[in-house]
Amino acid sequence: MSAITLKPRMSEKTYAQSANGVYVFEVDKSVNKHEIADAVEKVYGVSVVDVRTVIAKGKVKRIYRNRRFTTGKRNDIKKAYVTLKAGDQIPIFAAVEEAEAQEEKVVAKQEKKAKKEAKKEKKEK
Image 1 (cartoon, one colour):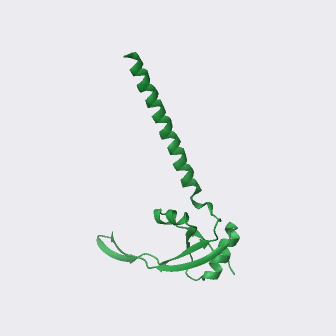
Image 2: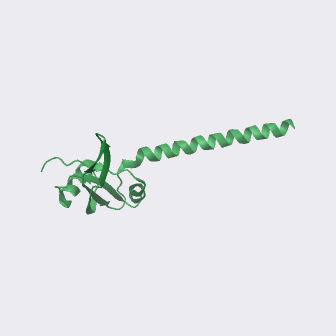
Image 3: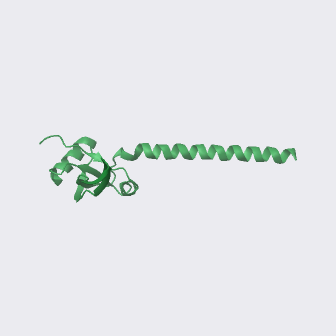
């Protein structure tokens, strides 16, 4: 078995699914579900319950090159939906959650400062 590359899919839909314990990865088209499950277990140290796969067909695109339009096709990709055992997590979206928490702190600080200034202006009147 060769090394399998697991590229996490970062989107709003996959972020929402991760709350339910389902993580989405882009994998090579030649690997099967058993190999995907083994790779996820080894890399992230979690226990996999289910693996579902889908091959998304690449879109046909038209580009302008050399004073004319040419058509091309994007590559097909295979997505693996990996369901983990209850209680297991993969910290794929940890950076996103940290950024949201930090943003909430900044907003709370600004609101507190605005209230303080409003109170100060009210005292002066």
